[in-house]
Image 1 (spheres, rainbow, N blue to C red):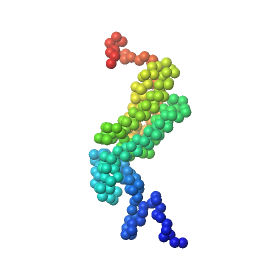
Image 2: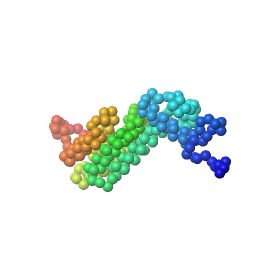
Image 3: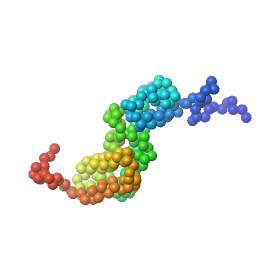
Length: 229
């Protein structure tokens, strides 16, 4: 049967008319550059990665990188955006599970550690300090979004247990910060095992929360000396 009228498969690189290497579609080239950028940024950071290296690794000229992303900053922003969306979606799903509060905390801790284990390059990029992450992307912004979800959960729990619900945002930041910092530590050490780490995080968070005082104060400062901001 003749195949002269059949078009190339859209998801596969198109064959070159000169018989050389198959050419990538625009979408395929973009995905390739994103994957290469993700790996190089994770290994060397934003400052340590150059457009020249990205292009050389992809086997293209520098103008191709500029054509797709406008430069290194654009590629980095695209990588951060994808990783942020991926992790936020996973954690949001964990925090909205129809389960008791302690179990929700356990699921959230394991979700973050799962991401670190399976998407190590992505997590390294998110926690790196760079010109892009200092603005409106990266890990700090992501954790702020997560804290917003935790704040909603804590607000309900605080109100039901007689605590001041206005303090929920503060406690949300503390909880998320604790889990996030533990995750960064585990990224480099990978000990103890993931489930053990999650169990200890939940142990500290939950048992600390169950013993909360309704009106806590510092014992080292006389009550009359506490100044309000």
